[in-house]
Every structure is written in C-alpha cells, then in structure tokens.
Length: 351
Image 1 (cartoon, rainbow, N blue to C red):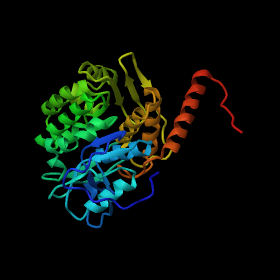
Image 2: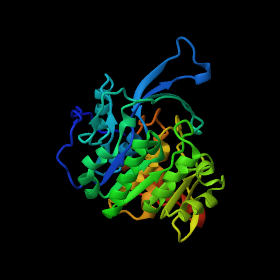
Image 3: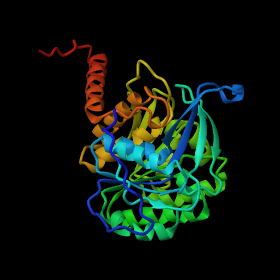
C-alpha cells in the first residue's frame, strides 16, 4: 500500500540546509521503468507497456518509508520531462526527495519483462545518465545528513555506475560508519555494468563497514564469493567483515548468518504472486528501517520477509509497497503458523 500522493518539491541543484534525524538514507539511482506485457524476445509492433519508476534505491527507500522510518533519497536525477513525475512518485511513496540533485542529463531507464520466480529480462539505457554523475562532491554536500542519520542503504549497482559513483559509495559508507551509523549493503552484481574483479574489490572495502549485507544466491554469491551454496556464501561474506549476512535463495528460502550461528528463516509465501522485481530491495529497506527504529534483528528480518513476500503482488519495483500494518499482520500470522508446525498445537483463536 502506498501513501497518499502529494506534489514533489523541486530538487535543488545546490546543497540544501542540512536536516538531521533521518532514520534511513538511501544512496543510489532512480530509473524510469518500462514494463512490457510480453517476453522481450517476443516483443513486436503493438506490444503494450506501462511506465513507472524503480531502481534499487527507490525500491528500498519506498519500503523503508512504508515500514515507518523517516527516509530520504540521496540521488542525482535528470532534467528530462520524466523527472517531475519520477520525484512525484517517490514523494507519493513517502520518501523525502528534498536533497536530490539535478544534472543536465537524461534519466536512466530500463525495459522489463518479469515473472514471479525472479527470472527477469532487462534492457537498460544508462550510458551518460544523470544517476551516473554521482560523485564525492555530492557526498560532501550531504555529509551532515550522513553523519546525522541512523542508517544508510546503498548497493553494488550504485558503485558500478561510474568511477565517480564508486568513490561516492565508499565515502558515504565510511562517513556513516565513522559516525556510528548502520550500513546495509547489497552487492547486486550486474555484469553489464562492471567486471567481477572490480565488484569484488568494492565489496572487500565495503564489507567491514557493513552491519547487514543482503545478497542473492546463486547469482550474486557465485560472482562475488565463488560459491552457489548459501551457507558457504554467508560465511565468506562474513569473513570479509560483514557483521550480519542474509542470503536469499529463491522465493521461499532465506539464510541468516549472524556469526553466532547460521540457519534458514521460514518465509511466508504470497498466495497471489505477480512479479518478483524489487522484492530483495523491499527486504533490505524494511529490515534497515526496523533496525533503525530499534527492533531486534529477529523481528526486523521477520518483518522484512513478510514485506518482500507481499511486494510481489504488484508489477514492477514499486508496483506494490505494503504498509507496515499489513506487513506486521503477515509476520505475526506466519510466526503463529510456524509455531503450530513445530509444536503441533492448535491455532490461537481470537474473539
């Protein structure tokens, strides 16, 4: 569920007055999403599609805001005709866009055809995009925001957009970590953006700063740490310095490794799945928000798995962003279901 729409403020081209106290900041790229109704290899004249807005940063920011955290987006958007509706959509989702910067470039975009198992087809247009101009100068302009926030979310996608973006991700992570904040990081390896060597090099520098590292297996884990076994992947990420690792291995398998132990966490399954795009980002945004708000890791992960499960009911990365009431209800029902399975006791009845 999304929040009621409001008009988006104009994004400043110069640093705005610092606002302390954000629960979560999300650093990354916002993309125009064109969602095709057929497999891309079958697309032909007359194929229908719809325009929306996504990108891992917006997906995670929307989930964080929906989970109750005061959330701001740190990004660079373009000066084309889609920038205003893009910012309006972010605002509608509860995300503060007042610190977003502008660049005289087009916004990045992608064409998507997806299924519920996560077997997605993408065609990207990113070269020379506004998002790729993210730089250390932007991070310096946001320094007071970063030192004042409780948590930062960023990803390997952001770090792979350009050499400047890589430096920006590192500086932002170091700034938040140095101020005692929490960092959530998703390696999100994309071979069309970067090579394995560069992605692994960035990971090696980011992992020791990371409180929560969320990754997929086999795709990301195989590329980043050389294994398609979730438990081994988690152990290798932790060996790099990540404090807590979450490995998603399909729609219904999630492994949590805290260092004190590793095990699979039961995942509620959406009975009416439509599209898995952005589900991992929803998990990261929700978990980070709840950690920033003071929840235990166990509760934050339970809420995050519930939110990610619900999110696949919509098309595209921000097609359906569940509100926290719905997320918490599913998490509670799932906890009760798992307890019944483990103990064999009868379900709890309510008046």
